[in-house]
Image (cartoon, rainbow, N blue to C red; front, side):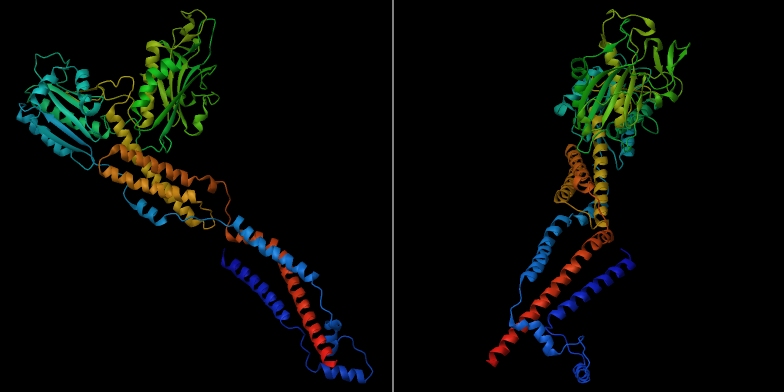
Length: 635
């Protein structure tokens, strides 16, 4: 409301108050005042023979109001009083139904909490174990790289001379056996969250039981738990081996503790992306679809799957269990028919002996008319769609090309924020017939396994990881890098640790942003209703945020992630409370513009008429009583 509007409103209220005061003053005066010189003027006119009915003498005025001493009637006064009383009684009801409720929210506490640094965890610790009888040059080199890696976000501790006998035994085992031994320690995950192990396993040249890679000199193997190990020749002290061993130490520390395993400048997945398939309370829906582009029952080119027994039980259940610390993942599946691609028809490539879809056509591959929404559960969690696409028999085999023109290893692609597509070329490609004749065939066996591996790789990318665990594609001279497959789960324990840290930090940051925005909105809109549930949710979010910070400082990763998730959920429920987003809020000048034209023309005549009726009744009562008193004296 600007200054001109305030001035006009104040002037209007003053005029109304002045008018009411004048009426009240009139009530307190039972007889009007006689004008100065009025009596002399009337007597002079009467002596001259002139009649003037405009002025009454006080006696005539008194007789007019006294009416012979008869008491005045109360019907008219009672009607006016009842109307005014009804309005007065209706005011609290109107105020109760229209007044806003502003429960106090902890604005100052929100400002203090949001001003603190973001949620940070204690730097992960990587314990490097060296055999006692290893060369001093190797020990010295590892100690130097450990000191160089010990920064604000990572600590590396070298422990030379530990478990020498046991390390010699482990060096003769295969990678799977070493990984099984590491996972058997500390409840199955090697070490507690935040602590990781890197073990050097020197091998004798005549020991081939472990299947080491002699061409690389040094091999870094990343396990499925929280342990990695380095295989190198026992007693090796040449410069190339020492350099590869120190690089293996640095790679293992950054990979296990920070998730930086790409070997390049950036990860394929974007951990800082604002997109997250998880809801604030940590739920996600994975929707899997087998899409038949052009089913042909005559040739048997129509496929289905047994989603419950072959897909969910064999693959997705393990993935959901591995990601349970990150959130709750629900899965669902369906089969679509006549779901052709929306892009242009793929062209035939003579060199590849297949139809190809270039990367420029991939944004138009998914048709918006595909009926992929299969469950009401997506109302609570936005689904991630994974489509296994079966191309028409006259357009397959179909290959998906990358930007460099080479075929995609998984023959699929990722749609950021939506999901991914995997192209499966069945045996009936090129017009062949199914072994089942014209009956429906089922996707199973090795074909289903490859399709699910590709889908899990796409899920890894959407969560911010690389499509696959560390492998030998990382270009490091004299250093071979590989990982132990995480079976059907697709996620190693140390990878889930990285995701939990990222998710906790992102969720806590989002919670603080929501609380800060909520406090700003409530402060900027004093006429906005603030229900009690909203204030309680904001308080709960602050409490969970403080608990998350305490757990992060104490190194309790799981507790910090849970508290950060709860803080985000409470903050979102407060910011999007249905009671505040379903109403319209108007400034004060809009309310005045509505109420004044409606109530002022109604209430002002009502109360003015009440004043007149009160004045009439009081004057009649006083004059009648005075007339009766005079009549009693005369008698």
